[in-house]
Image (tube, rainbow, N blue to C red):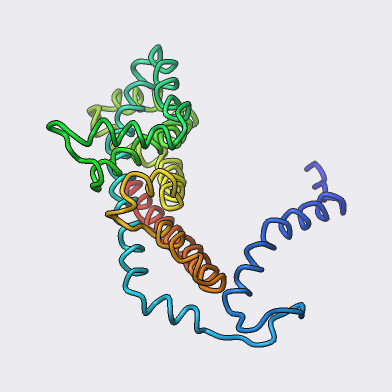
Amino acid sequence: MDAPIKRTGAAPRALMLLLMIYLLLPLMATCIYAFARDWQTTVLPERWTLEWFGGMFKDLRFMESLWNSLYLCLIAVAFSLLVMLPAVFVITVYMPRLESLMKGLVVLPYAVPGVVAAVGLIRAYSSGPLNIAGTAYILLGAYFVIVLPYMYQGIRNSLLTVSAGPLLAAAELLGAGRMRAFASVVLPNIWPGVLVSALLSFSVLFGEFALTNMLVGGQIQTIQVYLYHRMGESGHLASAIAITYFVFILLLSALLMKLGQKVNGGLKR
C-alpha cells in the first residue's frame, strides 16, 4: 500500500506567507513609488503617473548604460563558461587531488575587499605594456574573477550529481571518443546546473556597483552607476529605474532559461 501523503500544517504555511510578504514588501513599495505622483499622508498615492518612466526612457544615458551592463556581463559570463567548464570537468574527473587547491584559488578573491582590489588593479594596470586601466578589458577581467566561485561550485556539483566519471567511462566503452562522450552524454546532463550557475553569475555581475564604479565609473557607465548618479535627482525616478532593472533581469532570466531548455532538448536528441 502507498504511504499516505502528509499535508503541510497551517504553521509552516503561515510562516512561508510571512516570509514572502517580508521579501516582496520592499519591492512592492518601490513599484508603487515609481508610479506615484503625490504620496504624502495617505496609505496609497493620491495620484498616479508614468512621468518617471517616460523621462527615464527618453534619457539616452539610460539605454546606453543598460546596453553597457548587458554586453559586459554577457561577455564575462561566456568567457567564464569557456574557461571553467572544461577546467572543472578535467579536475573533477581526472585530477580530483587538485580540487582542494582549486577551491582555495576560486574563493581567494573574496578575501580581499572590493575597494582594495580595485585600487590594486588600477595601480597594476595603469602603466607598462598592459595599460588597460579605465577600459572595458580590466572590468571584464575583474568580472571573470568575481564569478569564479559561482561557476566552479555550480559546475562541480552538477558533475558530481550525475557521476560524470562513470558516465564518461560508459560512453567510452560504447565506442565514443572523449570529446564526443562529453558533448553528447555529460554536457546534456549537467546543462541545467551550468545554466543556473551562468544565470546566478550574470545577476551578480549585473548588480555589481562598487568595483565597477572605481574601475571604469568615469569612462563606462553601467546601469548601477547610472542609478547612483540619478538617485539624488528624484526618489521616484530612482524607483522607476530600479523596477525597470528588476523587470529586465526577470525577463532576461526567463529568456535564457527557455533557450537553455531548447538547447538541452537538442543535445539530448
